[in-house]
Length: 452
Image (tube, rainbow, N blue to C red; front, side, top):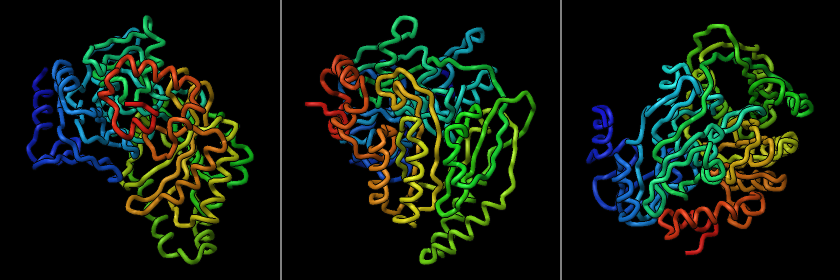
């Protein structure tokens, strides 16, 4: 371990508060997720700095064990009364291959640090979501993704994985030898063990051109499939009561650019919230003001490094539900969600976010076997989202949706098995890797139908 890693590990044992959000002044120790919706009183936190320490914790620490990423999930994936495994010391660059354009990194590495490391190597992620605060283990474990019909989620970049399973066995899975096991465990939910390192298949560094334009809702829905497939990456943002959608299109370019991430999207959300608050009883006026303002917005265009174009500065706290639908269901589902908000839930002010993802072969991936349209709806933190989320979820499930593992949903094991063709195969692998259910919390037990 180098000096930097030793300092990071010492910080994790700070007697007041660790970087991961633990309050450690006394017992029980308390952990909360990013949005504040999940809280866990844990018997022990294990800040492991080596695979040997991790193995010891897996074998001997109070169960249930749950691995910790950055706490950016809205579901109780981390929550436990037993032990939370803080793996943030497993971070940084381990090795890289410039000829193959691969990099091996600690699984606790945050995406914001990973992007800088890769840029220094002349490498890049093929695609990204717009938040870079997750650990790579958390992003892989919940099938986190960006947008683009020709682009897979992060887990499709896996070329090897190192983990310690529920029996304390160190395992190394290599794609050339263990591709089926990587597909079984690559979207892991923290149920197969604790990841320590991964090798990612990257691409050479590139610049992106980002174009944003406004389009009437009717035209957006009518041309939905062509809009989503016309560019390398397309996202659609629909502001409630706006009558227009913001279309964001990304394409590679050889041009140079110096675009830097700004807080402009945050400023827009703050304005929408203010209008919601002041015009709560005047939806017609709200529609007129927002619609006219968006219609007058001029197109914009920026060029910059890949990671600076993908990432936005998210400061407003919110809760979120996101479902992954068969691509052909996207336009119909979006139309239903717009109507739902504007007729029954006018308190919603966050934009609806629409993306696409290429199909893959990972057993617990929401994109397994089908090109996907992902639709996410948000609700401000501190406001009760339950009624709206239940209504939105009904729309998504009726159209064959699969939930984002890290975002709020109500699906149970029977529901999940019905829409994941290899769910039972994945559970057989889980039983072999964690036969004593060391990684099974009450939430995981209910979610996946695991019998103790």
